[in-house]
Amino acid sequence: MNRPLVLAWMSTVALLALTAAVERVHTQGAQAGPARPAWAWTPAIPAGADGQVHVLPVRGRVYMLVGAGGNITVQAGDDGVLVVDAGLAAMTDKVLAAIRTISRGPIRYIVNTDEREEFTGGNEKLAAAGSTIRFRISTDPRVSDGLAKDRASVISYVTVFQRMSAPTGTVPARAEEAWPDDTYSTPLKKLYFNDERVLIMHNPANTDGNSIVHFRTDDVVSAGDLVDLTSYPFIDLAAGGSVQALVEGLNHLLDITVPDRKSEGGTLVIPGHGRLADQPDIAYYREMVAIVRDRIQDGITRGLTLQQVKAEKPTRDYDPRFGKDTGAWTTDMFVEAVYRSLGGK
Image: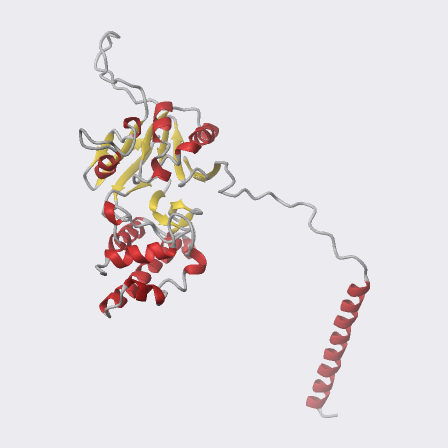
């Protein structure tokens, strides 16, 4: 017999046999009675919106607290505890309890990355629960060190303090006990804490007062409101925020982060909302903001009104991941803020 014909005949027979075997398996399965039981062990997966504060070890001395409003960063060691952002006021007791599962040391510093309530609401109570690092000017106990209250120091860029407080004779936005008491107006503020070099960097974006905090030894960045992996970024035009500043702020964040092998890992980024991120996540987020910006800028250049720009759905391909129709910050609000910040009328 011709060899090619033999091989073709054998292949056909094998295929028919396999098809029959599959049909027998399916038929036997259909006649086998009840379906296979579900897994005996179903792990409980905690949610960030279940009313509890959850602790995620990030790297080295750095932890992430989820569920208190905005994400909170905790760095703990022999010198005490440094906290980045303070969550909502209503969650402060649970935040303190979560911090105490990490360290019993004193809370020394609270850094506010901006002035929004979800990042500063717990200032008053967290600061009161902490204590200042004291440098005595005399060994004589009768000589005061000048501190009226023993509390954690609250650090922010100067404009955050200005918006939380108020000029003399006017009503402040927040109680004095919640105000930052250690402000900076330079490009960055440096700390050495728990054997870690900590850089607090002015990074205008959502407002003119954003800060990001880089823990250099553990290579973790706390980004605050600059990154929200659950929504389009908040832009406060009245507080000096703009979409262009946001893109530039994300570019700066990319400049100080480094990917690991195959682009995963490397510098870890704690966002204001959402899961722990790395550099590729930030690159994707930056590209999203820049693309939406460019689409809206193109609409403005073509003379489109805000409603016409919205009708073109400049966020359409990102809406499944970041879009929101309800809540404090919706897709429409984001598009309008971008449009206004680009000079749209």
